[in-house]
Amino acid sequence: MGNRRSFLRGTLLTAAGLGVGAVGADRIPHWCGWDRPPLAGGYASAADQLTELRQPEVTVRYYVQTDEPVVAFTFDDGPGPRWTPMVLDALDEARIPATFFVMGRNLETHADLVRRRLGAHEIGNHSWSHPDLATLDLAATTDELSRTHEVITRVTGRPPTLMRPPYGHLGGSTLLAADSMGYDIVLWSDQMRERRYQHDPAAQVRAIVDSVRPGSIILAHDVGDERRLVALRGLAEMFDGLKKRGFRFATVSELTALGPAQKAAGSQNRSRR
Image 1 (cartoon, rainbow, N blue to C red):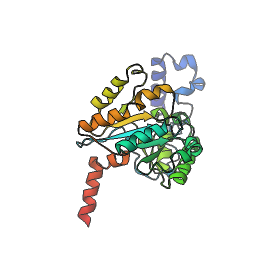
Image 2: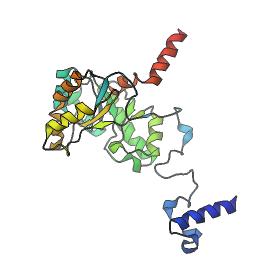
Image 3: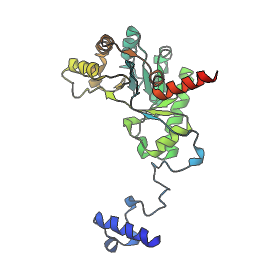
């Protein structure tokens, strides 16, 4: 077995232009992963500290498989005083629920801005300070999420059950932290393209209205620079256009409940009664 491993190691290094004879077995590059046990992993490993696991799996969801014309709007990075009130006003006017993936430090700073306005909406965890969680170890990732979990629960009275990693970057440490906190992970299937439509806001509206399909999860931002306005000023038109297509709106958790797995679980529970 030892000879076979040596052969494979030499073959792979040679293929990469790094033959063992030239490099030396004691100088194998760190990035190859052969200078440490293969399951010890790096900062992003999902094979460490498995005794802490709570769930049999962590769901990573881009959209929900459903034939029902339902869509979920999500807003990242807030809350903030510039754009969050505008977004909440548009949602209130259209009587539409949404899911906000908040940064913990922003929610702590601007809690009074949203405290009495989140009743119809879902709040998810988007980390404390918006680092790339895929580059952090489990302890640092857990700290980012735990601090945010605490402030969301304190401000809203509802502990979050969903998280979205900043930039949509996933590492193994993020999966382990999400598992330990009982989170499922939410990404997106459609998103605002403010740079692309910077000088054509109407095209941004059409892009969302035309591209949405049943089960879509749409990414937008309620904090950022001026380009966010390309999308945010068009929210009312997007809502109206999607309503004309027959769509209704839901939080991510409400949308998830329409998926086949959740429907099957609901049917089984009813049959047991």
